[in-house]
Image (cartoon, rainbow, N blue to C red; front, side, top):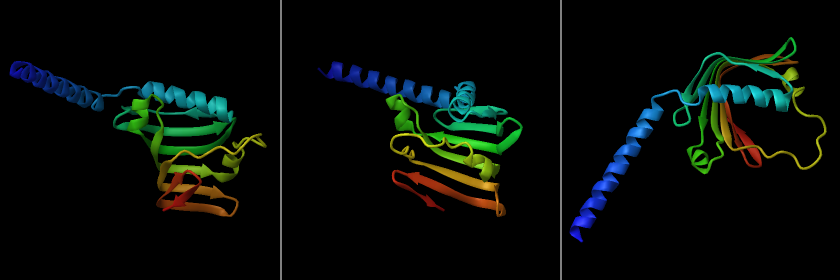
Length: 167
């Protein structure tokens, strides 16, 4: 009985070490970066009838993804440009098989609110869409409005079911 317990413990330690090595390996590599970039482009085209150009994308589902030189546009009109965007996924949602974004950090973003409002679908039937729980943070960003341009040095919005908080 003691031998069986000893072998079981050794096997368990081996599995834990192998899992830790796999997590370390995956967290230090670019895994899925091209897939994320292509999926973002397809979703933008299908859901917003707009185009998305993305520069270099790096990262993986464990540590998050970073994209440089992002531009959202429709025709000749640029709606959003971002110098760098960092996306973190909810790890529990990865385990469940339906990845959800936990946080988005935009650095050097320029958002045109008038053009952004045009992306919203007009008069959809049914209940309003529920906002996913996530945090969106801005640094060194500009918000262009009818009233003028606003510099957002640092701030964010936390989306929660039923509302949001600005910080």
